[in-house]
Amino acid sequence: MEIKGKRVVLTGAAGGMGRLLAKALQDKGATLALVDANADALHQVAEGLPGSHPVAGDLSSAEGCRIACDECLELLGGIDVLINLAGINSFTAYEDEDPGKIELMMRVNLLAPMWLARAILPSMQAQNSGRIVNVGSIFGSIGFAYFTTYSTTKFALRGFSEALRRELADTNIKVTYIAPRAVKTPMNSDAVMKMGEATKMNMDAPDDVVQKTIEAINNDRKDIYFGFPEALFVRINVLFPRLVDKALAAQNRIARKFAKGEA
Ligand SMILES: NC(=O)c1ccc[n+]([C@@H]2O[C@H](COP(=O)([O-])OP(=O)(O)OC[C@H]3O[C@@H](n4cnc5c(N)ncnc54)[C@H](OP(=O)(O)O)[C@@H]3O)[C@@H](O)[C@H]2O)c1
Image (cartoon, rainbow, N blue to C red; front, side, top):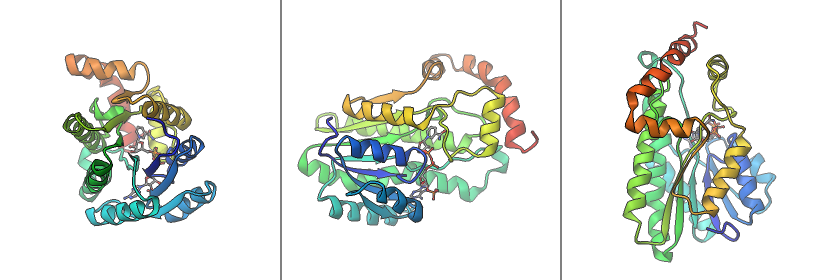
């Protein structure tokens, strides 16, 4: 899909990846509605991108998503691309996970993309074109210890993307699922960064993910999994999950110390 001239809604636009993706999309000629809960940061991003429309809003409820969607539709006059990028994570032993955080992560990482897609789909169907891009994670294919809730949300987002893509296969509305590996952004706490160093976790620069996301849209990719060996591990995990259990066991023991605040 050619990005030039497209009306794009980008959620999480004030975040580490979002602000770079917003600029890259505008550079390619898209008209942008930028959605984020962090109103101050969002307005800063929009000021740097003349012609873009900031839409400050909390996407953690169906009502919040409906309000944001209505505002985007009104501002853009229609939507060609929805990019569900907003997300939150949590790095902790599951016994320490806050139940409220479990619900919030399900809402922001899974339900918001589902609610937004549901709200926008009728207008895409009316114009018989569109693309929904869901940003998941490698952790949505490889269940990752101490990111248990986060992994769960991204597994479900991948399932949603696959099912919706198949449901829309006979239409001109496409679904793309993007699965980055770890990325250097503010999403990752100091504990995650230190654990990443201790376990030699590969971490990409946000710019790399942005460029590949643009390529995925341009080249009509159904999905994209980042990095070697992570993308290979995704395939091995389907066929031989016990091998991946073994490969990750030592790393998990190190990660536990950081997740429990004992390192
Ligand atoms: N960073 C990684 O290692 C990594 C790896 C793989 C996949 N991903 C995925 O990539 C996406 C972007 O991540 P990032 O690294 O750019 O994260 P980030 O820097 O934390 O940015 C996320 C943005 O989403 C916003 N947001 C959070 N909750 C929201 C809500 N309820 N309503 C509206 N906006 C909300 C945040 O606002 P606040 O600042 O106010 O919270 C923030 O601006 C996420 O879906 C993430 O899961 C990230």
